[in-house]
Length: 214
Image (cartoon, rainbow, N blue to C red; front, side, top):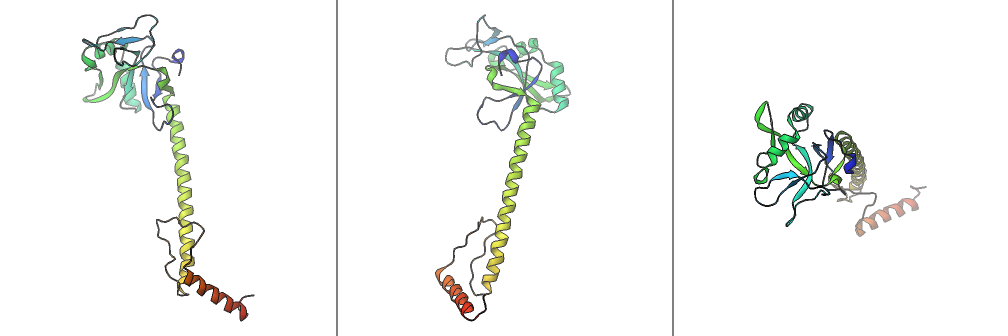
């Protein structure tokens, strides 16, 4: 997403992987203002200087980004609880000091349960759109992949059954060892041993010569 399209309070799908996304995390951006966390000293968080751009702190660089909530629990009730208690002011207090030790957002009804965490959004490209829509697409894609896998498995099982039905008939001709295991993918080809192939051909030729096969 572009920074200008971000709306505070919206539940967005978050992923730092832009190529292969199999799951989105849920985040809420609190403000589109940029803040800066110093990499040195007390790791103070302050308003970023004018003209700053979001960035992850590396080396001597400070971390610059938007304030957001990274949700740990995403059910409707938990998200509502988070919305009710988060604020820019609370985020600044929680992220202030030694690496933001108090940035956790707790469940007001269960002091031991963490609902989310204040973090910095260091690139708008990590947001991919509405969380519910994105998750629905992933779920639909996963369902289609499962349906395709189920179809392939049904075809494989049918091939095993067909192969073993033929192998049963070969057993009656004293040609054994052609059954497929339940876990195999036998395909449409059977490799005959030379001796069995000779026996089958001799039997077929005899049947032709004696008029048993028209």
